[in-house]
Image 1 (cartoon, rainbow, N blue to C red):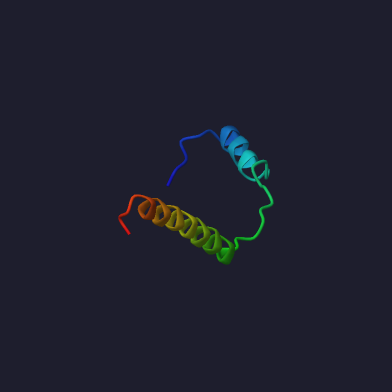
Image 2 (cartoon, rainbow, N blue to C red):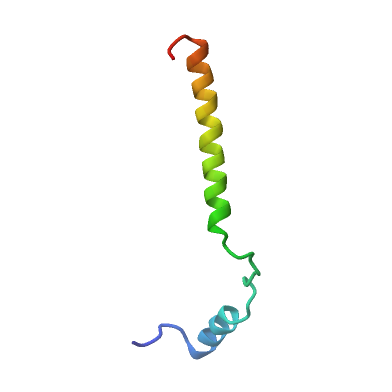
Length: 59
């Protein structure tokens, strides 16, 4: 595969790619926290829905 860029342009592209400009430190992914937030949200919405249905006499 041949590059369509001149060697000078390719060197500039390589320097930007390897400069680490967009490198950011991230907190580790915590799947249990995500699951907890989803379950808490689902529970709160379910309770609100049940309360509204109870108020209307559907339950």
